[in-house]
Amino acid sequence: MQENATLDDPAIVTQFYYSQTFPYLMSKWRHEIRRRLKDVPETLRQRELAPKFDALGETSGDGAWQVLRNYLDSIEHCIGKIVRGHSPSFWFHLHRRIRPMLAEVHEGKTDDTTVALVRRIAELAYSKYGDLARTDDLGPILRTKLETLLDGAWYEATAHALGSKLKAKKQYQALKWTKQVVMTDFRVADLCDVFGVEGLCYEYWWVSAAMRSIGKGSIAKWDAKTAWLRYKDNVNPLCFDYYDKRNSEARGFETRLGTWLDEADVFKN
Image 1 (cartoon, rainbow, N blue to C red):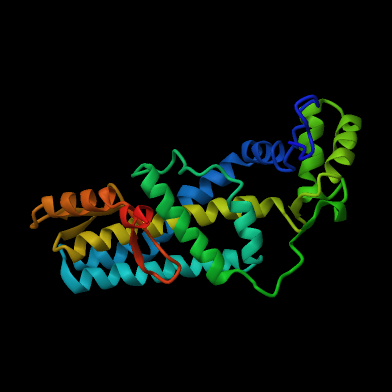
Image 2 (image 1 turned 180 degrees about the vertical axis):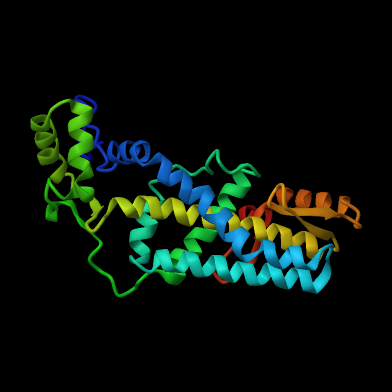
């Protein structure tokens, strides 16, 4: 909304430059996005993890834990190959304009806590592997051109939504003066890539959860039908329940230095 607007002035709503384009592209490329979210991680799992666990049979302890740990490195390597193409700022900008939820194709846990954990893994990857030398993939919208904004998809999506290329051109002229920071080197493949990173990060989270079970003493065996581990627990499941309950009830936060502060003590003063 316009900053200097008064109660007597009409409200002016600023349109974000990606608002129409991203839904349009996500619909147009939905099959590729689904493949990157689900099929690519599953193929990686079958190639890198299944043969090793299948050879171990029923297993537990350090051997099983190390196989999973090595698989995490394989996942991270795949994520790094994608992320190195742009700056960390570019990836954060793009990632935070995608709805914070996990896709329906993820058949496991997709609750809010899991969403936050998966997105945190992705953001760590952007920070670790993004190209810090790149300074040309974000910039003011004034430097853009209608025909190339968002790889030409802005013009296409807006003309489709408004029913006219002339109306899209007028919309672009108005949009240029909103002083927004935009992705100046965006390709449609980047949108597919950000979903690809999400799919791999979900796989990363899933494997780390399996490592937790192995670390607690569970016995595991590869299940070819589900393409995942089947557990035979010999530990009291209450251990997990108590741990999770304690975490969910903790009311506090960490500082950047890693110090835990209790919320009650902080706001008491």
